Image 1 (cartoon, one colour):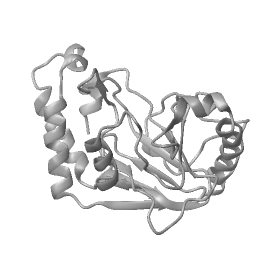
Image 2: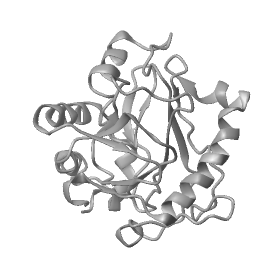
Image 3: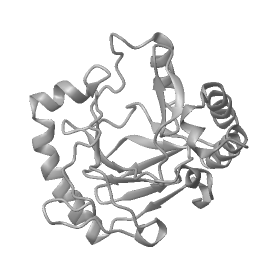
Image 4: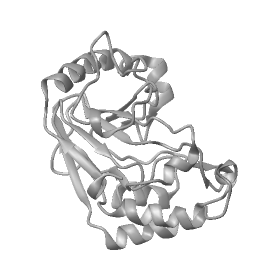
Length: 248
């Protein structure tokens, strides 16, 4: 568990070098019509970019290693291809297939969510499909608008809720348990009881999130997003042993 749910780090030369390399690669990805068609959402104001970055399993891009102040705080695990998350001016607009309720939630509550619980089927029932070990965000460019938002203390509420939900169940069954209502009730408690904290980031800054922390993205407000967008890279390596997901 990460004390307080998150740690925000200052810029370091190593992270800045990686951010510059990743940002240069991002230019090509974001200008690719096929990638735009695949990943632009919410009226073309969010490029979701799951697994869009071409890093190796150490996180390196174009030979530039991914090293930072989080290194001694996380388990030594191979990394997946990073998410390239880009917010554009006007975020969030409403997609044609998005419900009014979902859009209101995105605007009013920053689309606050817990990673790893995937919504499936027409009713978007929630199941634990991705037991993340941690969440790492790295800012690729200069933009403090539409910041990452976290609710410190939410990780304790969520961990307790899922500990109860999975009690007495073999871990082989965890991914088959519908946790929709459990998740909704715990998230409601978080939004009512926990402080909302915005985390604006400059290029080369990074944030390490507890895997259980509720987080989201603030809508664009008085600070304008530049034409290049607010660019963050995310890494969420997954445990092989699902039981590790609940451990402190």
